[in-house]
Image (tube, rainbow, N blue to C red; front, side, top):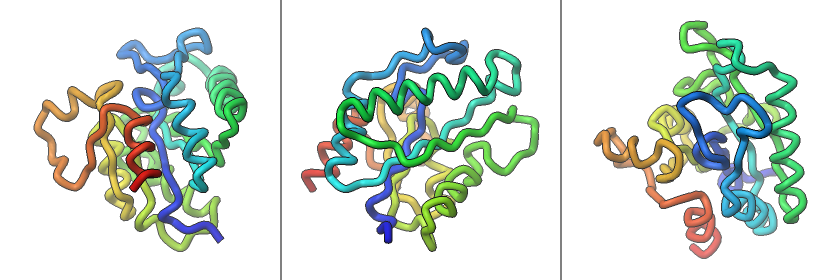
Length: 183
């Protein structure tokens, strides 16, 4: 059975790939950080389970459709697997901020979906890695240890002086993974 402490949940935009205030609307616009792909593969090889939880309100806004989103995720999975890694599950919220869903971060719905899918009693001790306060809030709501990366919106999140006292802060996903595996 999977040990919750060996689960790393990642936000997508700004953690795995470059983010855009105009949304990532196509496969051409989805540009991964090469070090993040390598880091995910490294996590897998070190015995960690990797999942992704990503808000994708661009679907609700009509900027792209679920077929386009799936193409981005299939490309991500292929890149990670080409380096010997594996992403166990990608959870996404297609809703807009006013849709009153239970899955849009900072609510923990996607994380609870991952917990159920993996058959975990709890997510206490798992890791939630994000570049925004809402990522960290979703993780904290279910007992995850939280990590802020400075890529994407991470530097802005850090500069806002938000309550980050529970979060570890790293320059990027690769730096966090190196620390996690070596500690």
